[in-house]
Image 1 (cartoon, rainbow, N blue to C red):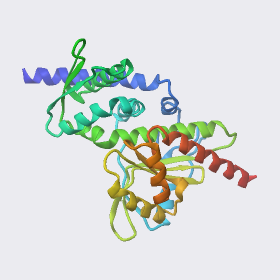
Image 2 (image 1 turned 90 degrees about the horizontal axis):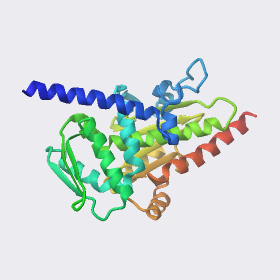
Image 3 (image 1 turned 45 degrees about the horizontal axis):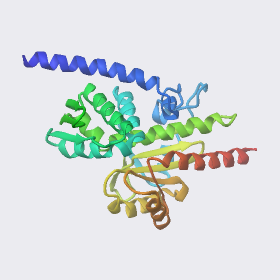
Image 4 (image 1 turned 90 degrees about the vertical axis):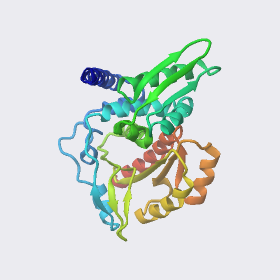
Length: 308
C-alpha cells in the first residue's frame, strides 16, 4: 500500500513538472520571455549573446581573483530549475498578496505541520493568486495536501512538507531565482536596444573565499558588457547584514549603482534612507528591475560611446 502511494506521488510530480515547464515557455511577462531566449541566459558563466558562435571570455572569475577572492564551488545546474523559476516568478510578482501565506508555510515547514489561511474579505485577485499558487505547490508536492473552502468560510487548508527541495525554495531560493529572472529580463531589454554584441554572464550562489580566508556566499554576481553588478536579497531581518554588505561592496570595488540589496518587506522610503546611509542601491521586489534597467542602459551607452 505504501509503495502504491509513493508511485502515485511520483507520477503526480512528473506530470506537474511537464505542465509547469510548458507554462514557463508560454509566459507572457518580459521575465518569462527572457527565460526562453536562446543562448542568452541558460548557461551561467558561459552565457553568450544570441547568434554568436563562441562564448566570450570569462569576466566574473578574473574580476573576483583580481580582488583576492577565489571561487570555491558553484551550484550545479538542476533539472528542476525551470519549475523553480516558474514558481519563483509567480510568487515574486504577487508577493503582496502571497506574503502572509508564505510566512505561515515557512513557519510550519520545519515539522511538516498543517496551516490555515483565511481569505475572507480579500480582493478576488488575491484569492485567485493564493489558490493558484497553492495548486501549483501541491502539484509538485511542495504542499502535501491542499484544499480551499469557498463561501462562507473562504479558508485555505494545507499541509506543509519537509522535502529538502521545498525547504530550499521557501527558505529563500525563490527570492534569488526571482531576481535572477529580472536580471535576465533587463539584459534582454538592453541587448535588444543596441546593434552590437553585449556580453552576459552570471554566477548564482557561488561559495567564495575572501582575502582573509573567510568563507562567503554571494547571491548573484552579473556582468553585462564590461560592467559588473552584485545583488544580495533578504526576506527577513536585514539589519545585521547591511553593514557587512556595504563593506563587501568596497572590497569588490563596486559603487552605489553597482551594489544592490533587494528587500521584500520594507517601504520605498526606507529603501531610500538605507541607500543613502550604506552606499548601496537598496530596493524592493517592485523596483529592482526598473532601477537595474536604468543603470544598465546608462552603462551600456557609456561603453558604446567609449568604443566609438
